[in-house]
Every structure is written in structure tokens, then in C-alpha cells.
Length: 223
Length: 90
Image (cartoon, rainbow over all chains, first blue to last red; front, side):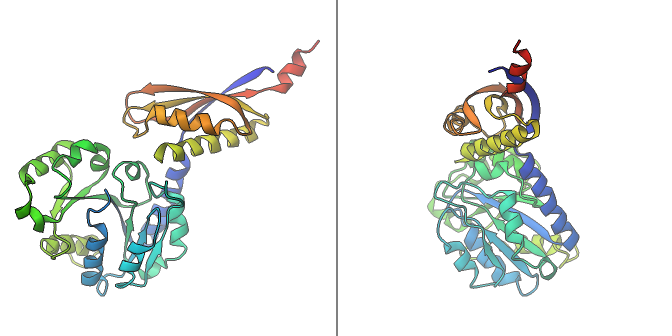
């Protein structure tokens, strides 16, 4: 049978990007700040969010969208601190990232008029989530001192796409050979524009600058 | 798997185009995958090999053009065109 060749020239992620723009518009219209937290598994995202909800939820109404290939473990932990947790469970064990369609669906369960800050806790993975715009104001990449100083060099896209980086578990520094100045230098070499927070979500050390940042970003504190 | 998500989106775009063109089957497609796109071209080709065996694809071939930069695009489609066949029939 004869074949007709047609030119398409479409961005493969066009649909995701269009939905992400719609999500971004919904956040902006409601005056909501939204951050997309990406990291490898076990960096401490959920603990950081638990601490953040403990400290700020009475002051800044916060909603969290969580993504995991299986289980509601993170959502259940966070639900201890707020009733505005929406699990966007990634279907199947092969799910590796959240996309804008899932955020669109999750927003149906959030009254944006009642919140000022939304965290999207992405699937623990430093590769795929970096690719997908979810309509957030900024990506925040989280990594921890147990992961090695070279994480930014190994996963440059995640660190390039992010506007903020959180180096977590600094309370463990005395017990590790982690080279903190080298890690900071690696961050700067991949993305010189990154704002970096050094935190220990488990103990609470270093969280004040993070809380202050969130207060400033949401207008709860005039910078 | 990231590349499978991308491959599924490629198929969705192709099926959409099949509807627009009113032609029955896709027999080939060309993609551009940038080195900085975050997508492994070989993995994407593997995923497409699996997906392109089902209608409206007819064991469609995929041709991936690797480029610098971060582009990730469906560039062209080859579609079975029965009208052209009938038009050419004496």
C-alpha cells in the first residue's frame, strides 16, 4: 500500500506542558505558591515536610500532593499534621514520576482558596521527575549527606532544573566522610543560581532559614 | 520507566494524527531525541518496538535522530494511504 509521509514536529511532552501551564495558572490565580520536591529515595523529603507542617501549618495553610509507586506511607505520615494531603499514587510499581495530568486531578481535591502553599512530593527518583513540568513555581532538589558529594554531578538535569537545593541530614556529618565544601562546589558547578539550604530535618537543625524562606515566599513575612 | 511514559505519549500523538489525517495505519515514525533531553534513545526505541505492534500501528518502524540539546519531538509519520493507491489504480 502506498505510504504518505506527514510532518508532525510536535514536542512529545506538549500535552504535559500545556496541562502544567493550566495548573500554574490555577496556582497564580489563587495566590498559591507551589514547590515540586524531587530527590532520590530516602533523602528525607517526608521528614522535612513533617517538620515544615509542624512549624508552619497553623500560620500558612499548606497542602501536600504525594507520589509513590506503592503505599500511602508518606501521605499517612503527613496526614498526622494536616488534613490537606492528597496522594497521587503513581500507578504500578514501574511508575517513576508525577506528571501534570496527575496534579490536575489532585487539585480537584484541594480548595486552593484555603491554602497558600502547596508542596508536591514527587516520586523518589532524581532522573525522570526532572523532565516533567508540574506547574510548580520552582523545583526544589533534596539530597542528603549519606548520598555522596557527587550527586549533582551524577544527576545534573535535576540540579539544573531546580531553583533551590536542600542538603539534608547534616546532623550525620560528624559520622561520615562527606566533604561538605566539595558538595557545595559541585552544586555551584552544575547550577550557579541555586539557593542552598543545609538542614537536618530529623533534629530540626538548620530549618530556620528554610522556614523563613517559606514565610517570605508566601507573604507571611515581609522580606 | 521514564522512556515507556514517553513512548506512550508518542503513540498518543501518533494516534491523534491518524484521526486528523483520516488514514488507517501508522507504518513509520521519526523522532528527534536530544542528548540533554533526559531520554535514552535506545530505551525509547525498545519501548516503541513493543508498542508499535498494536493497531493503529502495523509493526511500524521508528527512526530516532539524535541531536545535541534537549529536544524531544515527534518529527514525522508514515501512514498507509489507500486513497493514493486507488487513485493510482488504472
